[in-house]
Image 1 (cartoon, rainbow, N blue to C red):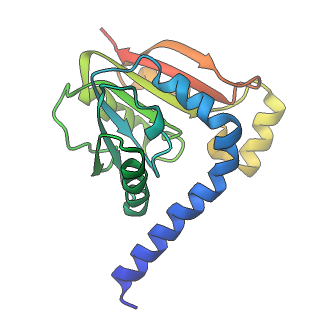
Image 2: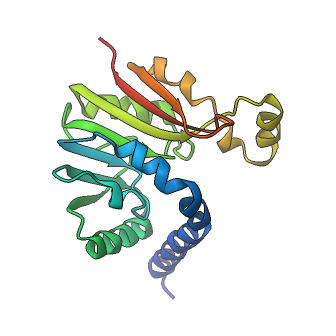
Length: 198
């Protein structure tokens, strides 16, 4: 099998495995969290890290959404889901570190569980700020370091990407926090609303 074809097969298998792994979490908590993330979003919207399209059912009517992801397998599954749901979305293969859009293009930039997995989260946030309109809002649903120090230390050992102090990144990027909402009792999952610093 040619290398290119093998990579494509592995990419698709990885996307399918991701959906399988995430299904229990989505069934129990994810839908409620995603509904909160998209509540009140309107106009022209960029979704970063669309993945396999878990947010597609929550796009508010009337929004014009462009959704990006770096993974071809992820985008293939997202495209199938969008077709099944009849969701009007433009899916683009792009790196969140170098978004292919002009400055100030979007009224909202929305992402769920993205910053824990990107190579350079500060650079990704700078790009989010760049493509956000002057009066726009970024909404980021993230799993972060919990309030419980003991649990945080356990996560440092077994799953450090679940224990990042994401809130410490924002002041480095020209984004200011409008609000931070904890969506679980331990503070592991938080919804951040941000805007450009004035």
